[in-house]
Image (cartoon, rainbow, N blue to C red; front, side, top):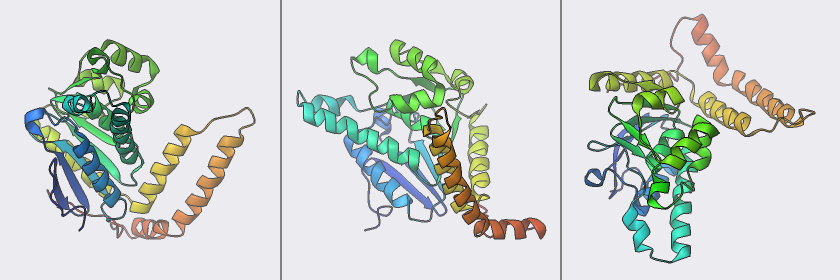
Length: 274
């Protein structure tokens, strides 16, 4: 069975190829992430790697994006350290998968954006927040730690701000999340929020799919590179980037150049109608 056509218990899937919308669907629990939701998200993301979709939009049903991990799941594990470890690492695997997807990942943020929801926002390529959204890392106030999302939070907003949010557990506004670089744009109304999402989708679909995938891989490699004294690590990275650039010019780059010269849209450009 196609992973995108099966019935999910915790997700709603809206397939509008080349756009795939994944709606976290536990609204009565503020879309708290159970292990079942984590596994369903991984299944969808693995499928997206080869399904031909070019944009993955993640949003929440009801009034919230995601209030974090499901505390009941943690309690059900009791004192079983292996179950707790496996539960926590499964969530980290999902975040890693989302981070490395070769497609554009857009997060539509509203209400509670906390814990695991905060982590998902940190690995999005484009995050848009409603003015009433509230962000927090409440783990330490619950006696636990943000074990799997910490690396992605630090990369997104820097160590200093990550320390403040993780160690104090305070909620911050959408406006402050914008100032920290956690989100890219702040809508001033529901209508504006939808406009920003549609504009982001349209912009992503005007970019070549393989170039998008290669550019994401390159940016991750740059972020993870170590600039040694003799520059060997960066040099190797740039050598590979040159190989990828040459391959791009010889493939999608030919169509891009032709479209530019002929004043037309390239053949990969897709007009998405909401």
